[in-house]
Length: 177
Length: 389
Image (tube, rainbow over all chains, first blue to last red; front, side):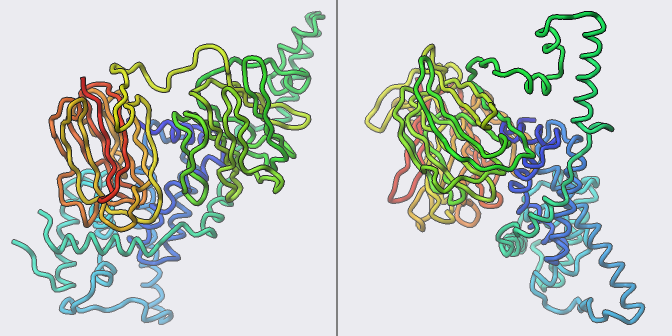
């Protein structure tokens, strides 16, 4: 795959352990990673943690990046980290509610309520929300979304369909037949 | 099929994302602090070098080698540099040059230049060590200031950008000087920001260079050849440039524009005119400025989409890649994202990406053609003319 020659050289320097070169990678892709994480995890502080962990993992694994654009590669790491962060937070919330502390974190929402899109997105399962973000925010095709999520294409199609239906229900939007 | 709800969803996600305007400085620092150097050897580098040198030296003495130069040549390069007083001048080469030491943090104490037989020399003096640097050649003398993004054009028709990392500039350094030498026409400081000091060097023509890293005091020397054949900025063009009232067709990459704020791409038009094919990118009224752009020539029609990284191949055998910054087609451009005008030179134009304020297009060309780029106003347009036989 063709890659910008300047970027190729930056990645080569990263492989050799040049931390300044890696800072150029952070400068180039940091905002994209942070925004994607923020849309999936729905929390600013958690998104920053995800962004940090994404780049630290990328640094540790930079030698596995061969003739590949770093953007999609970072995107895969960030998406997986975001989904994992959502699941960790969900487990913490279950425990917190069980012990009667930190209650009231989770918003109970009736499906009849007319929510705005932001709150409706909050209600989706993390892997469904990740599919929505990759497909509708990053404009990735279904195949590209599947590649980023490491899931079969049919699974991603199903997730997108289910997520869209759920969002329509939550916001009271009519489906176009 | 995309419906109104999906359009609203897409707009909402872009709006939410725009609430994160930049990567926070504190987060950048956390990442920097978390990135640890990777140990490559069980033994530390100085110990390894010393052990290797001692071993080689002992071996040489054991076999009765008395010639000092033979012993020196047998030493590792790092040790050899320390004991050899003068580095051998390198040949002039016509490529970009990275170098320096990433672990060095330093200050530029002086930057000076001089004419010599066969070359113009630029010397950058440092207070302590030579930092990590990149020397990047470019076919124009147009640069962008850091961090303002403002374009600046230096004397000359080609340029070299010098990026010094972990480096500060002394306040006494001149910001801009015009030596007016045969090769070196202008030297200007493009920016000092977050430990990165950048210089733009304006050259009379694309010129090969020689880079030396010297010590006592630590300094970086860049020589620009002033004799011998000048390199061409691009592969052999099939069409000779010709002058017209609108400007010359040139067989080099182009860049320009001005960052006056976000810009929306509104329309794209194509047409054949006598002697050239024209593609026009029209922008919505607003800033009144053509956004910062680069047009890069390539000897294939293989492109990479942004941000997916997926390869895409357009019609034709040569290509142009147009990248416009602070620009989006989202919300204003209603046309096709894959145009196939089928003109003599311009066969296809496809949007490669529209993400995070960067809008990019690939143009598939029938042959390796020279081009002319114009920035027009009322309405604001970027025009690319592609020369036809």
